[in-house]
Amino acid sequence: MSLDNLRTLYQQVILEHYKKPRHRGRTQPVDRQQRGHNPSCGDTIDLTVALGTNEQGETIIQDIQFEGEGCAIAMASADLMADALRGQPVSRALQMVEQFQAMMKGQFEFPREFRKLNVMQGVAQFPVRIKCATLTWHTLRAALQQDPTSVNGFVSNEEEE
Amino acid sequence: MTIAPSCSLADLCRADFPILARQVHDRPLIYFDNAATSQKPLAVLNTLEDYYRRYNANVHRGVHTLSAEATTAYEGAREKVARFVNATHSEEIIYTRNASEAINLVAYSWGMNTLREGDEIILTVMEHHSNLIPWQFVAQKTGARLKFVELTPEQTFDLNHYESLLSDRTRLVAVAHVSNTLGCLNPIPEIVRLAHAKGAWVLVDACQSVPHLPIDVQQLGCDWLVASGHKMCAPTGIGFLWGRGELLRQMPPFLGGGEMIADVFLDHATYADIPHKFEAGTPAIAEAIALGAAVDYLSQWGMERIHAYEQELTAYLFERLQALPEVTVYGPKSGDRAALASFTVGEVHPHDLSTILDQSGIAIRAGHHCTQPLHRHLGVQSTARASLYFYNTRAEIDQFIAALGEAIAFFSDVFA
Ligand SMILES: Cc1ncc(COP(=O)(O)O)c(C=O)c1O
Image 1 (cartoon, each protein chain N blue to C red):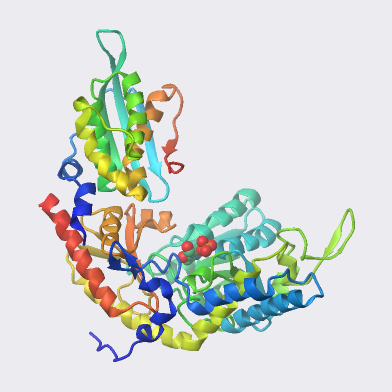
Image 2: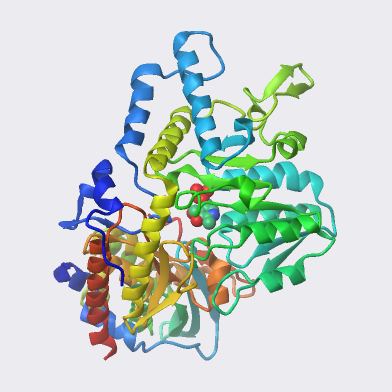
């Protein structure tokens, strides 16, 4: 088996986040919540978000937690995302959704501040696994863009190439 | 453990499948995803090419030589399929795109027009989505109710539960012959006998049995049976519905268009007899002819022999899988069962497992295999599935087990 290939996908950091997630659960309070679903494999992620305001008066993400079931890539991606986005303005988080997708196409690398997310770069070499990595980001975007008073369904990332 | 014969069926037939010689990630391909689709022998590939090179023409629409040749081959393949499943008349074979379309044909033509509020349809919790969603449509439209047979503790069809669901309101029983996830072989003759005693019809989804076992629709006793060509060495885009002639004749057409008519006026039409009544428009001609070639190819080895060899492989696969303490296998562990194993491996997600095995050139399926309700019933989100065909070997099983062991080791470092 070509272990080298596998090590680029399953970086130690990814495996650690899969094994010992730091952000599993539900936020207190739940300002946004969204279920993400990958219909082809049945993986699900339930994201909850607690919002706040920073000194500049921007809406920020106080906390993100996730529940659900999925592969190592999907679960580690959710945990890494939650790590990276705590304290970030919502507008910045939405920008990072796009940047993460660009990274999956090999077209972006996160700057120092968010460099831990770059461990996901290896996924770009496994095209069929990209939607595992992006599920949590799609779900987050839907959570942040939703009308908080609406009844929410779930988002699916099946259209992702 | 059985002793491998000196020359197995796979040894004899492997050279007929060019794709099996390819490499994946610099390793010889081990194709264990046959329940999703099978590989194609040269006999089938050559038939497709021969049609397009020598006699490509529309069927039933011309008097010229090419059209006559194409029509003869197209109808000849229908006779081969009829003989393959022991239908009494070849017009009882309706070509469809696949099994899903065949089930939809029955659901729309028969179900939508016949069922009423209060009628009941019995399915099982193990059905493929293809034998579930069309009946959900029928239920939503007609008010008929769906009921589901559950599993025995051995994860097979629960005949007692089935009997308790049957009633005078039961109009249809639609059930897989072999489950594509559990691999269990369902007792169709018994299911049919009990259904017919209540006046209900029976549709058998034979997608996972026609490619692997001798099938005799008369012995099974059912009223409709469906299968997909692509799982039995034929190309994609062709499948079939077998139905009892008198029943098919009573059913209204499903799709309208050319080919399915007798006499057409501006405001109405009369329809052709079966099978053409159900074959609107230009069909998948090359694929149908190639399905005939696939049936010839399988018959050349003999379905008894294919089944016997696969039983031997299955016993070995289960023996090896069950020797791994981290592995949980679903479905019946012994008895007459299909050559497939759905399993989970401790904390390793099936997707990750499949990616790791792919690096060793091994193709398995990971996910819910289009049986989401069954997975929910089993209490798992997804499983990995290794599914074999008669061209697979014990040596491939050994390599698969070795790669599985490496994958387990790779992840056990993490969970240590
Ligand atoms: C038991 C069963 N039923 C139905 C189907 C659907 O077959 P198809 O997708 O060719 O219509 C499959 C294959 O995926 C199957 O295994």
